[in-house]
Amino acid sequence: MKNRLKVLRAERDWTQADLANALAVSRQTANAIEKGKFDPSLPLAFKIARLFNLTVEEIFIDDEQT
Amino acid sequence: MKNRLKVLRAERDWTQADLANALAVSRQTANAIEKGKFDPSLPLAFKIARLFNLTVEEIFIDDEQT
DNA sequence: TCATAAAGTAAAGTCTATTTTACTTTATGA
DNA sequence: TCATAAAGTAAAATAGACTTTACTTTATGA
Image (cartoon, rainbow over all chains, first blue to last red; front, side):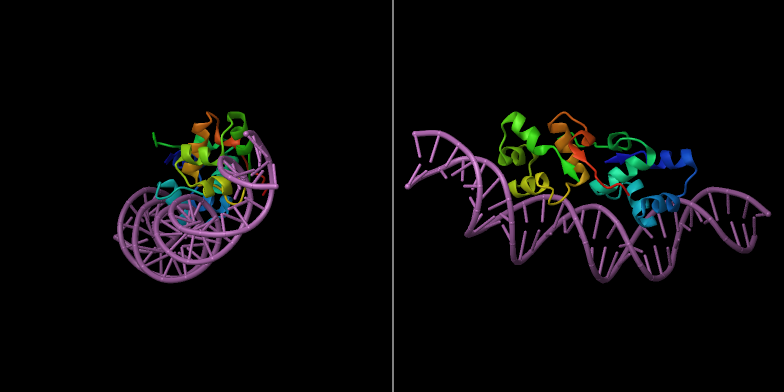
């Protein structure tokens, strides 16, 4: 699973801490998700999408072709 | 989190076991997700969306207004 | 009514998401 | 160069997703 968080954050000049704050998660979680270390839960994915006024699909790219 | 799985299943005349099969998850998992007992992981949500040729947002309705 | 398929549910176990604490590395600007 | 902000990372703990096994309840059709 890839994502566009780094770019979306850069467009807004937000730090990972800013993003974590806006999402009410820890900075480590924001970092781990952005780096693709793990996937957010579905509710958190929705929260992220809402924050950026985008759809889940516009932010997260599922690379599983199974 | 609500979802339209029951209807989507009914439209195709699929049992929960059929759905579980198509998703390669257990029947109990299909049942629990459909009943809203818990949310699917993001990868599974994508897999469900792909199965029905819909977006995640067209199937799962996030009711959190926070 | 009876048999059976489908749906619902529950417990125990595994795996992953997320938190907290805390440390290291990398960038940046004075 | 030095101080500091930002990013990266790691370990231990908790919560939630998912499996397997197994049982109960509800629908259905012969």
